[in-house]
Figure 1 (cartoon, helix red, strand yellow):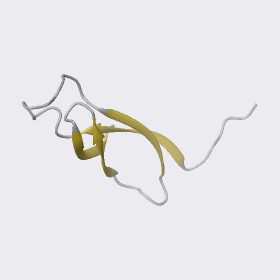
Figure 2 (spheres, rainbow, N blue to C red; figure 1 turned 30 degrees about the horizontal axis):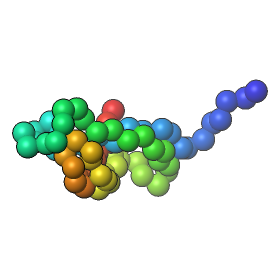
Figure 3 (cartoon, helix red, strand yellow; figure 1 turned 45 degrees about the vertical axis):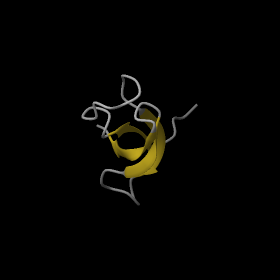
Figure 4 (cartoon, rainbow, N blue to C red; figure 1 turned 120 degrees about the vertical axis):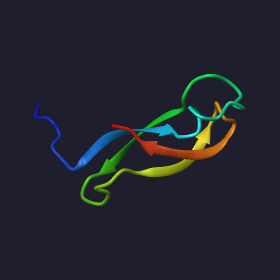
Length: 64
């Protein structure tokens, strides 16, 4: 079978406040995986998503 060749790639979103926030509920860093279209979003993506470690909605940025 041929592999899927397209513009969509799988990326990882990581919480930006988990590393610097000392008042978080538990240790660790929140990560989400999603897909993005390179043609529509050529730069790094930022979403506001729920972080279970910080126990609130925080900014999640695309990692390398």
